[in-house]
Image (cartoon, each protein chain N blue to C red):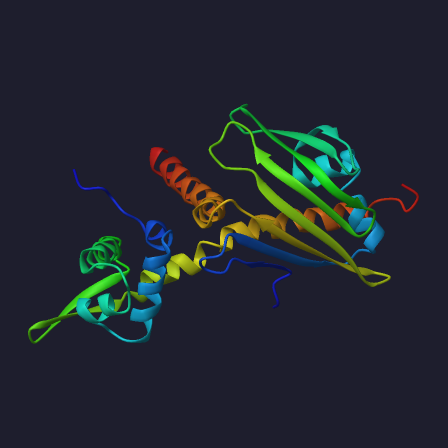
Length: 107
Length: 152
């Protein structure tokens, strides 16, 4: 059975976060990505595979080389995932503010 | 429009910073964190226990729409009126580890004050999991809404 992956699994790991920031600058071949790390090529390949499975990275064949690109749509999901958390606090604090504005001063 | 509540969660860090400016005097803002009846109103939780002092503790309980009770508790490490509260926070019966919270209350002028919260987590993934909660809940809500629409 193939596990379904989501973008949050992708950012849960520091190596994968580094790969994302590298590829964000320019499309890279798997070899060029692996050179940035001290791990084995297999380990880096595994991280690339996970990032591809959750569609953060997209493959593109250029001649004989495979290049990895960033999928901006998926990254947007990551940026937006903090928003519901922020909104939750914003609403809570708005309530706090409203309640305290209605408090008699002597309380 | 500038967002009133700011949340910073830098990638790869096991912390969240929340800051908010209130149109309230400092004393009023601080009171909202120490008077049980007021906490119950804005947090939507029941205050079972609250000892606002060094080495004190607290215990809150919320009831979800299904009637399930969820407990929260923690220990208060520092308590300085109108200045700061340092405390732990634990969600009972969950796999989330305890987190450490630093709350700093600041005076801006007689009508405005600021609250800065720093939350420190056991690990980066624990932080990401917590950040995801309202996100996942939002997705669920949207899903339930769709279900409602289509079942009618």
